[in-house]
Length: 48
Image: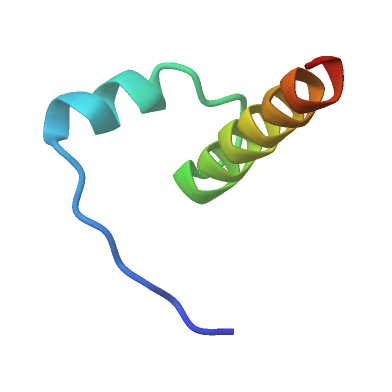
């Protein structure tokens, strides 16, 4: 697996850190956001 570093604004990182649960990492949080986005997109496509 390749790792692709990304640069995030400090304010955005601070906002995301405020939503982390227990020992959750930013990577895990972003993965969850992408999953939620994909599920919502799939729902809209099926409903169209």
